[in-house]
Length: 434
Image (cartoon, rainbow, N blue to C red; front, side, top):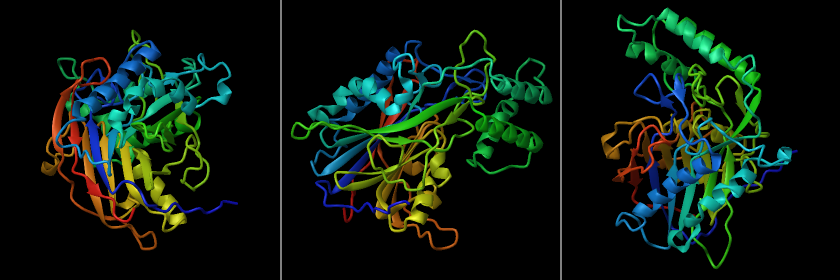
């Protein structure tokens, strides 16, 4: 029997929260298209796992250090600075970090142990006093103890789907696929995930085949991957030691992994057709331990809810609120690679905030200053909280707030599709009755 325990906002040393988003594209790199997507993509990064993670950790540290003294940063000790990066920031050149060789008794280890062994120490700079009053939402880390089986029946399924599709849409006289064709699979994957509406086109029947095939692959996946968001407090308070909170992604998007293994000179790694996510049990999302898989936790008297991409669209946190009414959060964060804020999935209370940092879409909203290259951030204030008891419930949100935009460039061009990115520094917001 589940025990109902409410999280309630407590008196906090923080009266305000300020969001900083690392607006960077985190999709695979695409061999056929200007946009990095999963249909014909390849994972970027370095062959040696520790080298890859170190370089990505250094990118986070460099970004945070570059703006720590910015006039746009609220230096008050009563303002919590929340630095957010997109989903898939830590993924490696095979699509997930394989750790069984490093944990011989791997049945007893999971992504939390992996994070503590590797990334926790690589990010030590963020835990120094310079980042006191900061909280880092580190996108996601993909890990697995299952190796790739290239003889698995579904391993070549993505290739077969693409081959059939391209036979239906032959190349032009110059041997090139048109933009319409190159975007076809990509558009269908978004439709299947519910990210974009169905449009009238000649591929509706093929779309159903693609959906059924990938659903079957999800059900029979031979590799279990944990897509984990880690939330790491910065700074050192009275000599204390802070450990991160872990949140697991629940719903696997049809775009989460590359579909193909066609490029034989590249060890493609973990494919959409052979991977699945760890099952999350129960409906109560309030964390009991820092290393459990749930999505709501309290930090310094502030109640946070974390959505990872498709979990937001599928209303993971709203479904929790529907079962446990009045468990609203103070701050809701959506770290994603292909998602924007959905009013029917926001469970932040009236006066609360919802923040999205995305590594695939642009919003083209003039209020947002500058989108990133295939990426965006968005901050909105809850004017009226969602009411689960009414038909078609939805929160009433403010327009997007306008951040200070800081253009940046990565020193390493081998990690993400584009070296340019933006840091978006939003004005601090009151935390209401926290």
